[in-house]
Image (cartoon, rainbow, N blue to C red):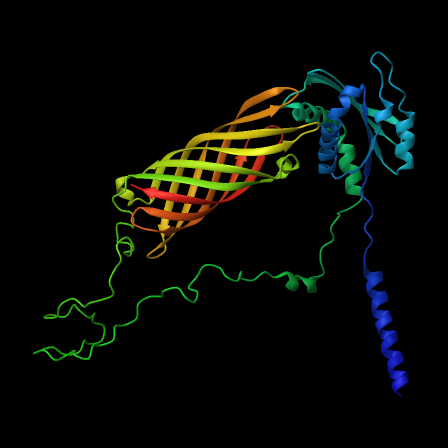
Length: 412
């Protein structure tokens, strides 16, 4: 009997595993584009990573799988006729690609020439072509991306048709699995945690209460020290600079706010391919209007963000120098803590030093916003932790990043 029961349990387990494997749906592959990047001269090989990254960025954004084939040895000498497209179509066919993109480029000094050809593999026809020329400088990516956009706009309908034919890449989860991804409150969130002072409870009556003539113990709802004939109650001594906030605000009477801060700049998006992290210092100086109880600050900001960028052929030291206006607002959470919000924007100078082109500079619009938590260290000094998000409007890639930092605030 035991042997029979064991056999039945093993058979049931195998059937369950086989059933679950059979129920899994195998997703079809993505439509693919075969890409060949051909440099016309050896000096232009340094620009190959820039061209390849731009092509991959645009094609993957349209839902195509990129199958990149570099051909450093297939360089075409200036003045020679390019080889026919039969080889790229044959390679694309063997690779199972539906489209093929041929990128031929040349670089001479500070100039670049780019030729893009788009092919339909099934019909073996070239359906679009673009030629562009421009300077090799900070906007080289913009030159390449603009050429790609012009080319892909002509065949976008065909690409979308093939991508749609493969169906969605992510299947919806079964209805029973929805509950497993429920996110609850995060442990350790700000609140009334243990160890923090809570609201004061009712005062205990002193042993000598009621010993004076006509004086009895305080009645329900009354506050000790406020009954007729009784002096103010004696509480703990208050250290100067740590008094609880008044109705006018903790820093009432201050008219000037100086806030320096330091933080790492954690790049996100396309900028993270060139530098993952930078180092930032910001100084904000604000005027505090009299009617706001020193909670509102209006003023200016200036700063510097330094980073080491890795380009196509060399590494360069870069700086972002923002100058603009800022607004800060703080809310008191208790005797010492405060919640602050800030918003700023203006213009920033992007400066990069390269060995080949020397120093390059350009002006960019700039915005930053964030919030933080501030601890009062005295009547005029506060220490804060801030989390900000910054955007420098570089073209074609925005320079964006998080800046979790430490700041000091003097209200004078």
